[in-house]
Image 1 (cartoon, rainbow, N blue to C red):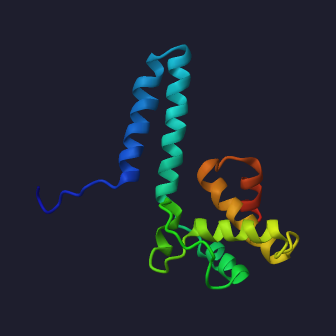
Image 2: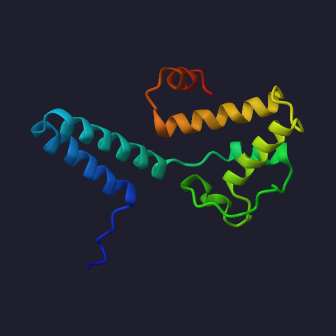
Length: 145
């Protein structure tokens, strides 16, 4: 391999497969095979956006402020969104589990404005990956949220 050869990133490989499926294979299919191929393309696009997404530290910081520095759930969780918390030993998933437990037990007010702001930001992040064309997401981004 020459020095100028670059190994493509995972998101680029997924893009290549999705493009092939969409432009070369999909037009030749009919019925359920065409439908299943569209579903596959959509799934690949979601994974691609997840891989390219820059995790928003404001959600993690907001959760840590709400919950304190330590979460009661400290087991590691292998989730693409969780890669930046590997050093701390506190996973994003464990923060969400702790948050749910506190709300359920009544230790945290579900109408707390700080909580609602963090949950709104998290929802917008997920929509950016799962369905960036969703009208409420588009409207929120146009408002600068």
